Image 1 (cartoon, rainbow, N blue to C red):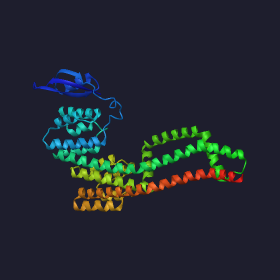
Image 2: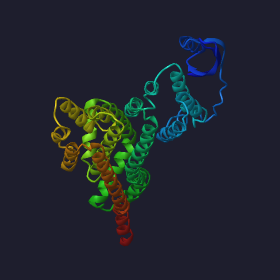
Image 3: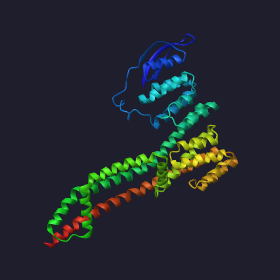
Image 4: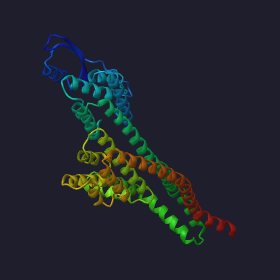
Length: 402
């Protein structure tokens, strides 16, 4: 895709100037002519991307970008700035070229008569179904500034709690990788030399030392085969995880991991309640809210639960009764939803539940991190000590025999 600067005259004779994003200049001209414009000039925009921006990993749209865009749009709408002008301003100040291109395309679509939600829907890689439907509800209710404020707050909360859950797993993963690396280096570089020295002495070697030497010999001779098997197995598991069956299996396994599974359950329950609360407050109907939340909850198990719940609600069941059919939903959630149905205050009840589960996730993560650190250090120390002892004790016995 490339940006083109153009000057044109519309059907009323007024001069127009702007930019358009297209694959090539012919496509850009065709798109402008469809808008009823007579083009007087069109030129490729100078490429001002830095060397780093040309690398795709640096030219991407992050969650922080969408939060900032949402807040800026809220401010501009409150200042009575038109949608077209707002997106043009944001495109000019965008953090990355990719975000600038997306906002420019949205502005061009709005200029061509498209609604904001329809323009956003053309970019599903940046704006989720949840985001687009929230904007559509805001358009229908005439409360776009409030809707974008809701979205910014929601994305902030969701990003914070998701990152906290992920960060809780970084430390144990790092310690485990360090442990395996140290053990691997000792098994392939240190133990073989010590084993040869022990065998030259000719004394009896303890059973646990022979086990360690056997594992070391196996790794030395078959390390390449093991690495190849790990790579093939990793690729197979990755491809399997992309299938529907694989997603379900992976999600269920994740929810059943001791300590960690409970955190994930609370995380997804918090996200479900927060999504539904935000959508209900913006005027989206509960049935549509369930369908959209299922598509963005981020877990195959809870996506299936919400999809089935939406089908049951469509068939006439109350939301609480539809949720009761699924053991993945705790009884307290069902009771709270039932209260919301009876009082007609579902949005507020769900908001309360979302805040409760956010606190639960934060507390669980803090507790897990505080326990994991000493536990992993002890495991690492014991593992290395056992490995060294299996070799050093026979050496000590040999030395004491002289």
